Image 1 (cartoon, one colour):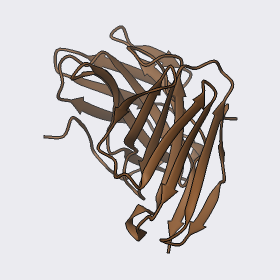
Image 2 (tube, chains in turn purple, yellow):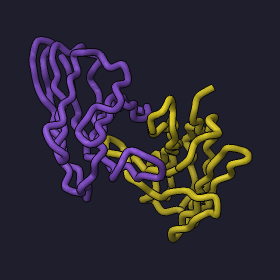
Image 3 (cartoon, one colour):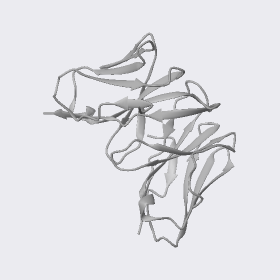
Length: 114
Length: 112
């Protein structure tokens, strides 16, 4: 069983809605990630937090807003999304952001934007 | 050229067969390598790390060839439950930050 917990598992939202995805890990990992995955494609990196600070933003549109309230939690705030944003959103964590660190994924949030 | 390339498959093999996947990477400065398994509509799960010396975990053997910049995964005595997509993942420094680069995945179907 994964030790990275994501909620909700499924989310349907309209283009004018505001919603948030949540991720939690209790492995003491100091790096946390958001990935987006479309069907039959590999995960695409969106954001990386290292020691609760934003380390990487892969030029993600501002309608996606990440937040790392503490070392165990990672949120992704969604606002004014487009239908093409429908995808599986995966949270992951690693002990540190560096060489040889293994990445552990949560089970994801399947997002549909109508 | 993509940073990490895999044959998308599908590889259709009978139960009990041995199957091998390769993955090539373009950045010679890449420093760590992994195989992940992903079932349909599920998250990727770490299968094994890959080392230059090669490593084995039960029916699975992974190998890294730095000179030719490829990694391989060998599955012996395939089981129906091995049917999944296998993702090659490369980790290294890019512009001063560490990133995981995913291959497109190789789909395996083990047939009864």
